Image (tube, rainbow, N blue to C red; front, side, top):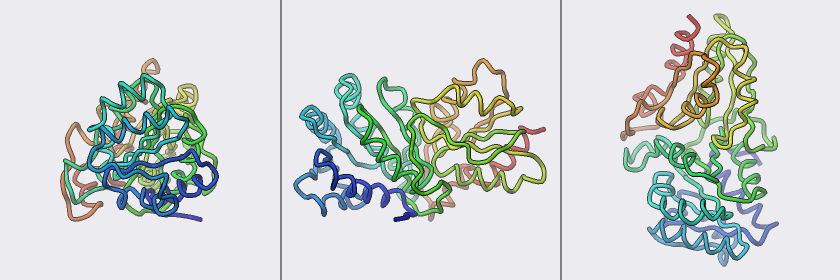
Length: 308
């Protein structure tokens, strides 16, 4: 089945996987109706745990469940999933290399109405700085389905961030998700855009708009950590400049990760992302993205500038 919402894709896939694997359990922090953990609760009520507004405790319980052989998925808004439970994630799950899967829902600016307190603009930076942690940011609902399957197959701590809103898929339905591997979305030779999450969609639109001016390569980086450095180097090699695009602060996120990989290549790099600022409330998702410059138009101008 094809989905257009990452949260629905996530919840539906957990239900499907739960049918095959009785070790999968799901924990929610009073947000199951938003994270779509409620779908698992309806299907398998004895394997779902409502923990209340207590992310730290939820995360500690998940660690305990992992030590009994279960595969726990913890769910909350991204800003709470990692922020409120950072100590438990670091001290217990990451140091212990426990098989806990953390879902940060309504990530980035996608919870447009609730403003800065509910918008996670630093979660990728926090999570990728934690040793032993895998960090995923799928481009769309199609890729979310396959990413969740890959999370179950891998052993160890993993964080996935998901968008709240509906938007078109840009990845192929059913394409196997390989943790660590970037995906070439569009060939190009002048500028390479490394994008993640919703920004992959905008990067594809920008590349299409610029096709008569220049050749723009678009790469979907859906694994923020670990990153296949050889693949990133190869994809950037023949292009004269690099642009990164993320619905996240430019401090510590995808742009920082790509810069770390390319640090010896001496290629010009420019970032499209939040410029070291918190989010803000807005009437709709497009308005808050536009306010922070996360638009196709801004990406087009950034690419043009890097091609001069």
